[in-house]
Length: 354
Image 1: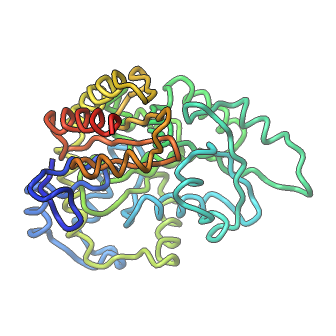
Image 2: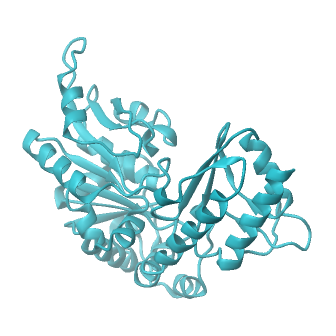
């Protein structure tokens, strides 16, 4: 829980903010590292802290090189621009971050179109890609990239199954198709599956991951991949206005996060499951706790509009996200403790009762 701030909950009542894991604030250790960071001009590649973060991130992701970017959206769009040519099509999940939260970016920046796959849990396999490769199109349209999301936000933080992802990776390599992983919550996937981030990302040619979600940093994402891919990505970042100067003050927090905040993600997962178990007992909503794999809990409401539940919870000091007319999302992070979870369950019970 966090104390009230501007626009917070009722006076004197702590706020349990479950809207997203992007609402986290830096830890004291991060703030100290930021204040003491050695810096230089990163556009000239002279910031030693950024370089250290990029090297560390690449090693953790099992890739040759990495590029520090200001956001996950920028990292993803750079990857799309590097892997594709204007007029190409990209195969990806219909509820992916690319389509839900980066609206029209691939068309505006890269001049490519999407070939979405409808899936229940946010993942698909070679058969779905093969189908889209074989679909007739007007003229000649080249499919040049396949994108996956792991964990999958709109699928409730679902982890892409290891065997299925490996199979998709082999298929893409055989077809000469690059595979990009939007791994905004890559480390959640790793912790939940008991594997390293490098193992999770191994089937992908490139992977992006966020520092500013469960890892608790104020800003930043990394794009990781082959050396030549990252070199071209650096140029694209500059073209898109993403070059940063003394960015070591931000990168310093990322180094702390990668060293201190990864293993503790298991606590977020445990609390998400406790939240799901508690909510599933309440009348008026539908939720299968067995599907909660990481730190995201999504449920449907039988009658009450999601926006109304959101309003009632806000009055009770709990914040959530109404992501559809009858669908609500709650996300755990390091600033929500066990008491915050119990508060959220109790507040939801009261809010559903009116």
